[in-house]
Length: 589
Image (tube, rainbow, N blue to C red; front, side, top):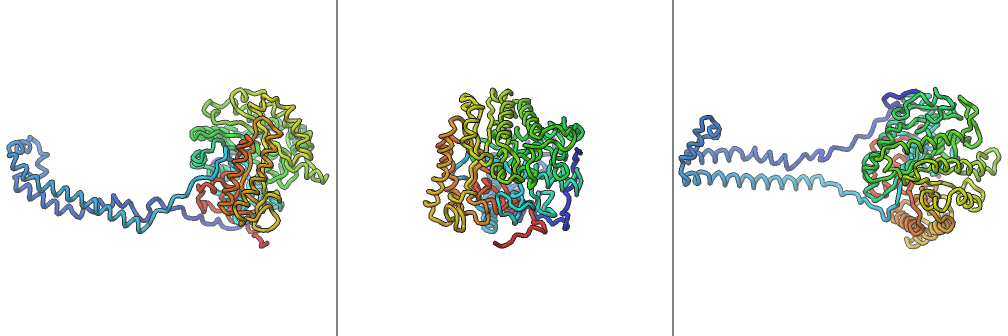
């Protein structure tokens, strides 16, 4: 582990660093502050005339020059006391009239200037910032756990990446163009570490983290009426929990303050991770509290990969979390055991938070999509990576860590995320397991069953611009609504029938097709889909979280997957560039 003092962004490895787009002009650029400017000009124009009038009035009334009114000895005030009231009235009348005329002239000229400025450069109409329906929560995906498609630039296409090279093209602001496509966070970080050094790699990840989600994002989320924010993050936020493997590697940094690069404990030669300073996370909680938001901490990626997807951090490498041991330091430690260390570290950190920070915590999800794709991969012995019994045993052990903590008694919830793709018979396996592990009282108070739901991979329900799906994007809206309603309610009603306690769907979207080139982009169509989903979730007592808040560097995915864009808050183009690597030109299909 190496500390990371601030370092300048490193350039494109293949070409000179491209120029950045110019920032937006300051407010009123080219127009100036018209009212103040015109008022000043009016005074300059009329000042000579009014000065002459005032001088004539003073002479007629035998008044002293203005400077003598402020001279010593009080002689000026003596003169005023000796003047008759009639003389004073006569003398002041022209002055008062001149002042009134001056004020009217200033006002008229200023209003005329304002009208001219408005007609010359009209202010743009404000974006309509609202949604047809509002979810209870939203994810901050692609921020503290990278996914390649979020950063695919103009070359993005698939929500679930197919090609092993990956779709990642950039990581703004420090890496506007990667020298080659990147497939997952761990591989990108290792490449940056090897080519630019640990300090520059850590600085690049830190720059991304400080720019991707801003204070205005939290304000916008709160403005929409959203109450909870799911925060996916990697195990590297608690990398120091792996000190029993190698204290020199995982325990040499200050976990509260430092962003450093640490190796993956299994794929050390190809994969690395950037730690996430915990004081910064605490500060984020304070900012969330200021906006009356609660954060659901979601451990999204684990050492050696616990799922088969780009978010695992090791993809396209095979997930080894469930079966292997550390390949560095203490090689007797099972990687699944390190996952429990990380989960315990998160729980302990939450317990020690100050009250203000803890008030902004909704709960935890101790593993996202455990063993995603294991059931499918098991059909090929070379790809098999997890057994159902091992997955359920780990989830039970992690839930016991939460149960034994003070968090349930302090109003915090455990979101038990379980995904169908890990099981051959989800209903027959997971339902009895969940009811055995959690009592009815726990299921009604803090143990939340959490299932993700998307139609983008469902040919019966998906929407496309080509034949083969549930509907075509330009079908009449009542037909689109009927299909969407049937599909989502089949899921929500089945979910509510089989699980009777607290329920959540911590990921859903309005992405209509997994191949974004042919997905629906029409706002009316997507608005109907959003309405139908949120209505169905509400009727079934399911707490929904939209995936995700923003993805400005994956523009082809934005219509269906960026709530910030749907709500009209996203600026385009973004200030930072995301340019295609030389070897990732999109092909016509």
